[in-house]
Image (cartoon, rainbow, N blue to C red; front, side, top):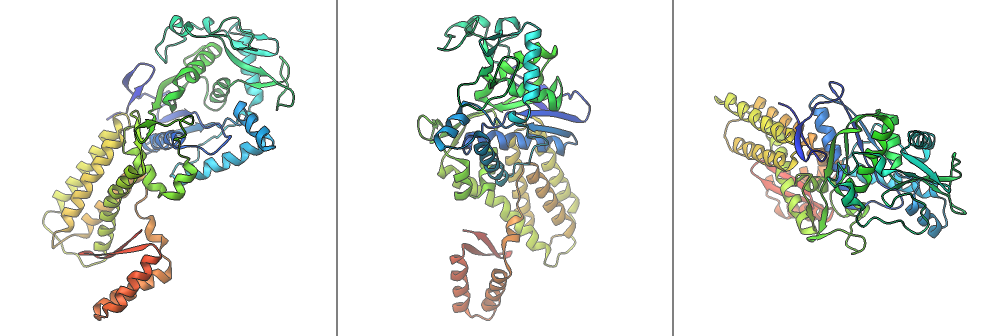
Length: 466
């Protein structure tokens, strides 16, 4: 089997063939760190972390790069409003980003390059474009000559003439052509700035990713990814810059995740309906948030509401409950059954279906459906009077393995019980055996006050966070 990726560049699914066998070079556009990220920013973080995990699961070595834009107009505006320095604000919100997406199960990138730490490479890249005739300096600014690059518009599937309609030169810009875009901005008085051959200034937005992708991954990379909103102009401009300067294809596969809607309306700061991930992870279990985000195929839009998140919690709990029932049964005596091979084959079929769905453009929605089918098989097996340790263990290992591919955990809550609560649960079990139901109810109420909900099941007493 081979992995297929929907490539925005070709608008079709293509079989993934890496530049270097067994390795994936992947660049993901990260946040502008002037504030906490909203859930629209959290979606690509989760989605492309899952893509990375799946590549690693399939045996690839992934060099994963995600940048931080730590200087731009928004950061300068925030610094002026708060009376702080730009680096101070950037450092604070880079740390916040790492904490928030870390809570959502997102692994650290191999490299997290920052604009301010790669200024030499950015300036050199711009100079290379000027030397090749693809860029020009104009009164302290530097612009890219868009018409000098024949392939402009190939990612967003627009012609240069279509793009020309509506393009205009803003006040203060010194362009040759309305379609030209900024590579370097002359500094205004009091702004953070760097020395360059064109005077003191700072980079335009698009150039940073081209320069940092080249530095950390090379002239041509396997996958470039980000939100759908970045397709044009950001990624279109990256292609023009990189291919004009490097003389080679920039990225072989372009991946873009869909938008997030809030209560069926597109999330927008102008509408005031955006939700900060920083707040969301405090209000809801981050594992449930991640599960919810992966319950829709990444290219499709996803609708968010508290009610839908509660539904995702119930669905995720079904999988966790099946796992806990497995673990509980392993602690009791088991007998040899005659149909072990049948069950082991069924488990393997679930696993192969999971891989098939993930191979098809990382379809996590269908992969989660396979996990529900695996859960049904677990529950059916546990209804039998006789079970075998080997089958129970294979069920548990397979569920752990597949759920971990999605960056989820199903056994972590067992570690959250401290000795005192554990002792109370055991005391309640004994009280029930002794028919001391008043004490059993008292313990249940005490645990409920600590947000521990007990469930008396056929598999024994279980608990969950309430």
